[in-house]
Image (cartoon, rainbow, N blue to C red):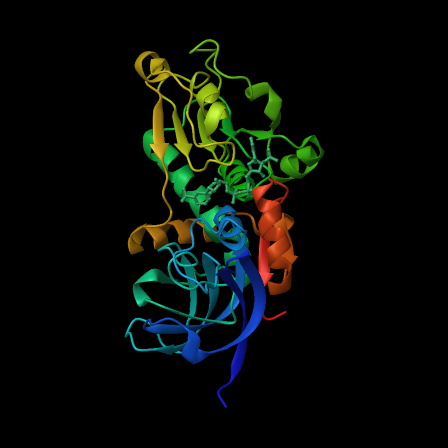
Length: 329
Ligand code: NDP
């Protein structure tokens, strides 16, 4: 009999979707050049959508979610990888269109992997995960366009993208203002390096005046919606906003005035289809710049069995920092 391993399988029937930990064999896995013994995965906002009852992003059932993972190559038909190599995967619609990381084994295309960067363990790589990788892309986009004077604003700060962005920007020497709807997370955010806490309600009102005082030297925005519209009118002249997410809504009730009269740049960040060289560069900078004690402070440990609850929690904005899933626990 073939050896079995555990995975979280989401299936769909007339009663909706159910997520259950099941035994699978290698023959169940989708095609790909590289088979990986997964060590860690994590929980991102998209994972919540894929595990949950809506299942909106999942392209095939039964499905193994998990949009990212880190582990050790077990078998490879591609020259770039050999058994024993440590690897990381983010993006490429893994966990949506192709079975993902909530499994003790995964089989994927070699093109989707990058070698684990020097200085990071597989657990640390998943403490960073897609959320942290995206924060790095967002910060790099701000750097490419020039970070102006004044604090850099991070919205959705106690969440995954936000937590890593706060720690990264602080480690790079920037003043960081962290927006949170959870005042009880103020100590956590200052511990990560935030110098100013902004209450979510202070930015919640819809735009009344298209321009307010020039306040922020840059912004990593994980929230979108009315908050992003409001922030656009508070940017320094020529400053940039990296738009990462839509935890607060997909609409954008803004005017063109901040772009016309303040030269504000709105930069869209996509982590899914990043070319190999960009992924390697972003991971190397994360390993170099992100303080590992701050990364550890963000970690919430979890197992495969915890995922249905955690998937629901992240969609309600109730998760703090980064949930790291030990798939072998
Ligand atoms: P989290 O749920 O961990 O964080 C989101 C945070 O946003 C929450 O913790 C909360 O922070 C805040 N928030 C939640 N709901 C609202 C609301 N209604 N209004 C204002 N603030 C709110 O998710 P992630 O950090 O993993 O992801 C954040 C967003 O980024 C998601 O939309 C996700 O899909 C997107 N994303 C995009 C990527 C890309 O490639 N572009 C890659 C990764 C993520 P607080 O309690 O501090 O206010």
